[in-house]
Length: 356
Image 1: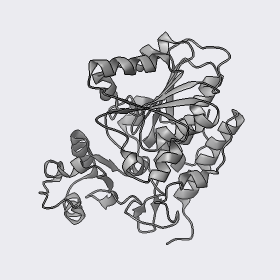
Image 2 (image 1 turned 180 degrees about the vertical axis):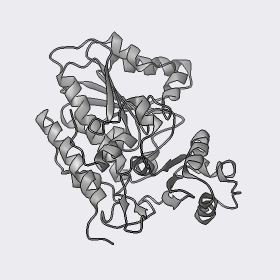
Image 3 (image 1 turned 90 degrees about the vertical axis):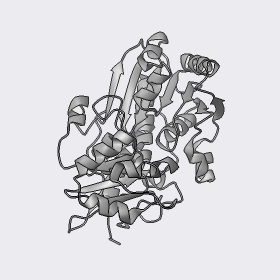
Image 4 (image 1 turned 60 degrees about the horizontal axis):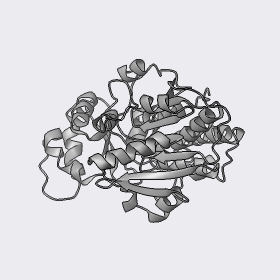
C-alpha cells in the first residue's frame, strides 16, 4: 500500500471539474468527485496498488514488450481463450496463470489486435501516439469528445421535463441519466429482452441508486414490432443516451444523425469504449481496461502499473457526459456527442483542465 496515488488524485480532480461545470449549468451534485468515483461497494482503498481490478475480472499482465489489461467479465469470454492464446478450458474458472504464461511470449499490440477481433476486452498500456486518436482528431487531451451540430437548435430548452431515452447499461450511461434526473428530466430506461443490463446481476443497491426514479421498458429488438417501438421512442425523445458500438446500431437500421435532424433541439449522446469513429470504433471495452488503455494507472518505481480505483473510466465518463448534455441543452441542442471511455481516462491521466 502506498501513501498516495497520483492516478487517483488526477481522477478525483477531473471528476470535481465536471461537477463544477454541472453546478454552473444549474445541476448541483450531492456528492464530491471522490464519493462518486467510489460509489460501488467494491471500492475499498484508492491507494492500494494492485494488478487485479476490484471487480476481480480484469488483470494487468505483462506481455513481451509492455503491459496488457485483460478483462473477462462475461461467461462467453472463456470460450474464446483457445482461439485467442491457445488455452484449452478445463473448468469454468478463469485460467489466469495460463494466460500470464501465454502473454509473456507475445507483443501487446499483437495480443490486443487478436483479442479485439474476437470481441475480448483486452487493452495495452499506451506508449505514445496512435492512429485511433489521430483519426478521431482528438489528440488534444483537453477535449476528449467529439460534438457535431447536425440538427436545428431549439430555443428555451431546459432539462426540466425533458424526455431522456436511455439505452445504455452498466455505469457510465446510467450515471449520466441519474444526474439528468436530478435536474428534472424524465428518464426512460430501455433494455433488450434478450440482453438486459448486465449490472442487474451485480450490486442491487447500486443498480437501484443509479436508476432511482427511472421508468423501465423492455423491447424485443430483434422483432419488427420491437424495432418500431424503439424507433418511436427515439423519435419523441429530447435526449438519447446509448452505449452501443456502431455496428450494433447499424444492424437495427438506426442512424443517430437522422434522428437529430428530424427533431429540433434533440441531443444524441453515445458513450462507448473507443468512440464512434476511428479504426477502433468497434472495439469492446469496460471501465477498468479502458482506463488502462488511456494510461490512467499508477506506476511503481520498477515500472509496474496498478489500477486506479474501481472501473474509474466509467464514473468519470458519466460525469463528463452529463455536463456535456446539460451544456448542449442550454445552447439549444441539435447535436450528436461522441464520448469515449478511453479518451476520458486519457484526459484525466494528463491532469488537463477540460476545455468546454
